[in-house]
Length: 227
Image (tube, rainbow, N blue to C red):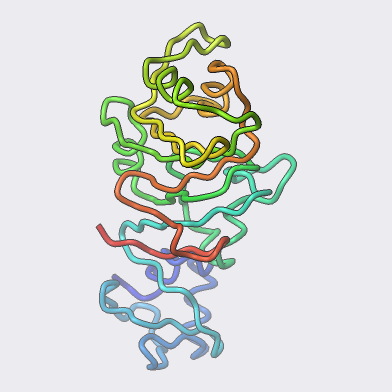
C-alpha cells in the first residue's frame, strides 16, 4: 500500500493532507522518517507511527476489532443526543475511520462493547440466528428469589410488542444481584424482561459478549482484539 493511502486509512487526513505531511518529513514509520508519499508500506509490519514527533495509535488493517469497557453516561451513537458518544473515547484520528458498535448499550449501562469496521463480523455477532450469548449483571430494585429466575428462563411477555422472550440462563448471586444471559438483542430487552417479570433494573452491566469480557480492564479503557 502506498504510504499516503495508508495514512488515509488510519484517519490522519485527506489525500492532499497526507501527501503534504510526508513530503515535509513529518511522518515516521517504525522510527524512520519518510519523505516519499508513494513509497510502499505493509500495514501488518507497521509497529509505530509518529507525526510531528507525536505517537499515533496504529489501527490494524484491513479489519480491526475492539473491546471497550463502556462507562455510564455515554451513548452508543456517532450522533449522540444527550450524552457524549462512546466514540469520543478514542483518539481523534480513529474517529475519522468508519467504525460501528456491535449492537448497543444504553447510556446508563456499563460493560463490554465491541466495535469494528468488519460488517460481516458485526452481523454474525448480532443476528438472532447465531444466538451469541450476552451476560448481564443486573442490580434489582426489589429482592428476588428463584421464582424470578424460573420465570425469566420460561419466558416473559414483552408488553410493548406482545412477544414472549426467554433468557438462556438466570442465576441469582444475591437477592438483589442477577446474572442474566440472553441470546437476542432487542430494544431495552433486559430492562423490559425484568419489568415483565415483576421487578425493576436499578443498574445494568454487561460482563460478557460471546467469548469476550472487559471486566479485566479499567472503566473507559479499550484494546484491540485479534480473532
